[in-house]
Structures are given as C-alpha cells and as structure tokens.
Length: 498
Length: 95
Image 1 (cartoon, helix red, strand yellow):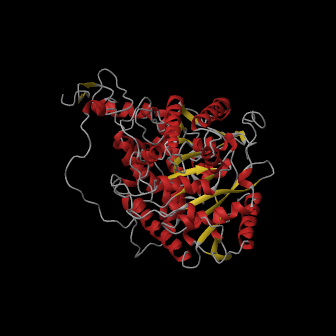
Image 2: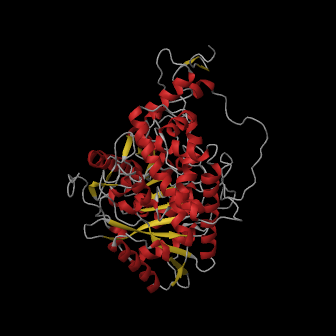
Image 3: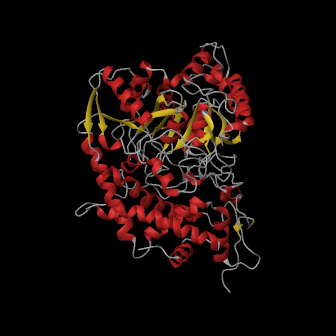
C-alpha cells in the first residue's frame, strides 16, 4: 500500500501509516489540499476549500498523537456538505439566500468530528437546500462526476460523494432525505450510509424535511463508514428527535460473516425501465452473498409504487414550513425597493434568493397544506406512509437485511433531466421508501457498466440495526474488489462530453 | 383538477414568494404535472389506516426552563442584513 498515493488510500490505510509514524496529519492535509486544487476545476465538488483550517486541524491532530492519543479519525481529512453549520466558516446550503452567512455555532456532527481530531478540508456542493438528485440545483454551479465529467454526481450530497471519489478527502458527511447520500454514492462509485432516523443529531443541520432528514457518512469502504458512523452517532439533547439509545461498536461488528443471514430481495425493486447492466450487476452481487453463505429470500414491498408520490407531498409540505425562516430579517439576503413594505420585502427577498426547484417545492408544499387540500393530499400521504412502513415491518419478519439496486440507472448526463422535474424525482424511486420508514440503508459499489460507470448495491436494515447492513457490505467487500477501483484523473479521460 | 394561474398566485402569496409573470406560468405547468403524478394516491385504499407524522416513537423530551447557552447577542445578530446595535431593522410595518 505504501506505493499508492495517499489520496488513493482508505481511512484504515491512512491510520496505519499515521500510527507507524510514516506520515503525519500535516503531510496528509497538504496532499489532499494539493489534490483538491488539481481536480476542482474539473469536478467542482467543493464550495469552499478550508485551507487554513485544515492545516491548523492537522497540526492539532499531530500534537494530540504525539501525546499518545489514538482514535479512528485522528488526523483524517474530511469534507462536510455545506448544509452543516460550521462556526466561523461560511455555510450557504447551495443557496443565494444564505450567501455570506457565517454561523455562530457548529452542528453536533461537526463538534463530534472535531473532538475526534478529523481535519476539515472543505465544504461541499449540494442541490440548493438539499432539494435535488443531481447537484445541478446548486446556486453555485453543478458538480461533475469524477468517473465522467460530462455526467452528474447525483444529489443532493453530490459534492460529498465526488470529493471522496476524486481523492479530495478520505471521508465526508452528507444528509439523506430521499436518497441524497445513497444516490450520489452509487453514481460516484463510493460507499455511503443513511443511518436510522434519530441515530445522528440534526442539530446545526439546515432543515429541509424534518421528519425525513438524516446525517450520514461517505467513504471508500464499508469499514471506513463504520468508523465515521461510530464517531458521529449518539444522543444529543439539542435535537428532540435524537434517540437516547447506546451506540454499538460498529467496527467490531464487521466480522466478515454472513453465513446464516437471511437476505431479502424485494421483487418491486427491479422496476420496468431499469438498465439491464444495473440489474445484472445487482443480481450478481446477491448471488455472491449467497455463495458467502447467506440465504436469499424473495419478499414483497407492495406499496413501493406509492413512495415517490407520498414523498413529494410530505417533503415539500415540511420544506414550505422550514423555509419560512428565510425572510431577510435575521440572516442572509435581503432585497427590497426603497419604498417596500414588510410584505414586499419578504416576497422580493425570497424571489431573488431561492432557485427554481426550491420555489417549486415551497409552492407544492403550501398547496398540499392549504385549506381544501389538506385531507386529499397531506393526510392521505401520511396514511400511505404508514402502509409503506408496514411493508418493511412485514418483510423484516422474513429476513435480516434487504438487498436492492440503489437506482434504476447509472449516472445520467449533465442537463439531461433539468427541464423535467418529474423525471428527476423518479431517480429516487428505490431510495425514498427508506426515508419514509426511517430505516438505515447503505450504498456500495457492486460493478461497472460497459462505459465504465459505477453501479450501486443498496442494503437496508431494520431500525437501529446499522451494523447488520454494515456487516453484509463489509463481507461483500472482503470478497470483491469493486471498491478498489479509482476514477481516471478527472478532466483527463472522458471529460468534455458536456 | 388542473392548477390555474390564480391558484399559483394565491399560494405564492401564502408562501410570501414573489414571482415574475413568466415564472408563474412555468410553475403552473410544473405543479400541474407533479400533482397529476401524485394523484395516483387516489387509487390507494387507506380506510382505517393511521397517519404517520413521525417514525420515532419518543415522548417530547422536557428540560428545565433555564438558559444553558452563553449570552453573546452581538455574535447572534452579526448575520442580520440591517440592524442597529442588537436590534434588527425592518421596513415600516404600520402605515
């Protein structure tokens, strides 16, 4: 491994080198900052490179190590989706309405990473307010897929996924409301996990749809994900939906054993229109798990077909309420003519500050909650949500973990779906149910198509059983090498296709 | 029921969102298409089904009504677009 460039390492490899004294956190920080500088013009995964912060974090980590301290993330370079409040560092959420906003506090997950000694390299690009599936809705321009810069990175946490894929950090954090970690992980050929709702604190995470939003990690391997999740998970009294349950030792759960585990394959997840190469790769991955000793059972999730419709009522309704706070008074943009009254000021500020997709969802949510439509839309969707949850409860009576594709296709082209919001929404058809049910789910690479684009496998576990999905994913990676592939130097190979 | 321009203007006012005329028509078409898609829920029988507002079965946590954060008002209002000391300034409300 010492022949590899540090920016191609895993966290485990970096830690080994740090513990052997062969490298320092400062060396690593410089290597990743240099890498970011060289790939950013082609990838645009980051909205801000926190160079000074990275160097001071790295020096602090080296000092802690010199005093004998050890830890899974001590000195490890990380990136945060620009939805996490970071004290003293601009936080835009991909929106003009928050341009220039500098939070006076850190999110809980950011505090936990700092205490663990992680090194902050940058803040990553995202769809505005996490609303999107491609990162093309960022007010600051899209992120390109490191495997083919003419294609999207997925979204909404596209910058966090692309930053790991392109070697700009060893791990990153994102948020997942309808697939926003798993879809970009799949498109960018890295691992990503959405934990159980309530597992990681949402304190300091800019809210999109509060009953669905959850924080989670990206990394190159499932074992690395387990290390990051172990650091960020845990009860936080500042988030009233944070669950006061003990956090298992995720890394210790990775024993490589799947023998005797029952893996459910939901028949509804192999949808019409799925790319044949995606279906073939996922079915082959399931066969591999069978050959490792797991029992494969077919299960049904019959309400899956209602998931996208349910989500696009529940999530915009919550968003329309959460985004009411952007009023041009306390923070962010204000826009008002000299003679404007208060109402004009609100309307002009929000018109100028929000992009097209955010406006679309605010209006959709306001409509679904408005007088005369509440029962027909919002209440109906909440009842459909119950049926979707019940489907999973029944399926988990027959199996321990579910295995499915992450998405029906590989990464699509930049600009391909921007004119058709509904087509974009359907990218999340296989990830959205998990959020409605609040379950943990993991995405990991399980193959490549003929054009060399990554294909993702999704492993879904019962609530608070993250370790079950992680164990299966890790066992798969011990038996395969898809996760060892790295993209070509971004911009060099397949670029220019846009 | 198709979404009308009047509907769009009404909900845009409720949402305190100003919209350019061209944007109103664009959003009318988008909402019409999305609501047409979500209308498939009409065929779903939900009689006797309880709504899910939240997936976590937790009671609302209570705490002492005591401030625990340090007082730093200057820092808290630093991001405001228009202020006078620690007061936020807004356009005239009363005519």
